[in-house]
Length: 120
Image (cartoon, rainbow, N blue to C red):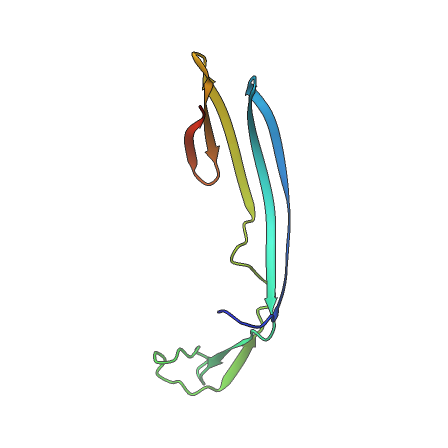
């Protein structure tokens, strides 16, 4: 749900490690590993769960006995943000053809592999 007011508190923390190297002289390659955690706590985001006399949870429109005799209030507290990415691994590997050293190829992995031509 979108709230137009600033009624949440949150944080983001993380670290990223990167290793650079040259498998082929003059062509750089690297690999990285990142870990990140994001959380937010929305003010007054509680909700209620209603129970009937038999102790069954009441689902509006589905429960036959929908007379509430007990109510439980849930306070979710801090929850992960939608943009939370706990672990991310990326790799870039570049190579070139010995006959045409000015033509390099790069493969990048960041969730999926894509290879393409870089250079002239």
